[in-house]
Image 1 (tube, rainbow over the protein chains, first blue to last red):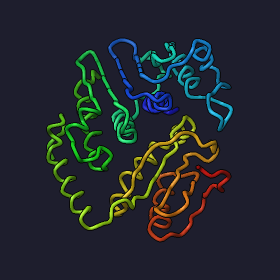
Image 2: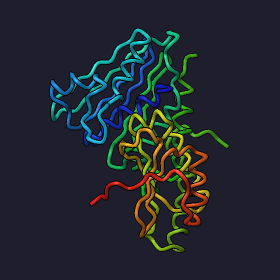
Image 3: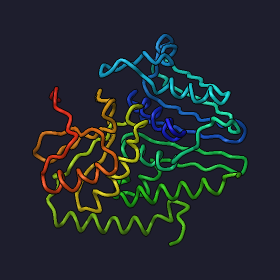
Length: 178
Length: 129
């Protein structure tokens, strides 16, 4: 994975596959960079949750490897960080990835606003909540609010996608510390 | 152009899109949408499927093609990512492999507009029921 936004898209896809109706993405860069992805999907039992960091474990039948979580662990640990997964059946899953921001190997953020909007546009049945906090302030976006505002206008219209991406990017730029 | 900071700032864009949709609905028969499914599992994302999806969203509209662009999981063609499944109304879906933005443009211009098949089609080995 080239950047953090790709990891966010990837882990959020796990949530969507677990039939989540709400996915919360928290980016907190006040101290160490913490990315939290929380869903209300099916969740996993203890045994499965332990095995997801194994690259040769997957719940799919199309292939025999499952690299999303292992790649995230690899990138986080390369910066001296870690990944924690909390999950229980029926309760949903929370994945917390910690990265040391100052570390040479910390991947760039990438296009996080674009990722959030694409997730929201491609999954109309899922409420995508995004919160980004820095030392300077906080910004949050909620796809359900955006849909309510848009009314009959679809969120996946290219002009709307571009405008929402710009809106999120503008707000993130404002709270960026460096 | 003024900066968009809140949803309220989106009002003008929303109205433009609404007007465009109303115009379109009067002139075209509904229910004839092209479906574009971009594979977005780990393999796809790592191969750049996000750029491919953005390209389709931006350029289908510019080319006047009405389509729904959605995401799907891994179809098992990890070696050929980014893969895209395209269903034209009344036709069997076709899976294209190695769809970079440049190839996406070729698909839009040749397959979607002129019904010509382009390189990179992954042979069908199953049928969805």
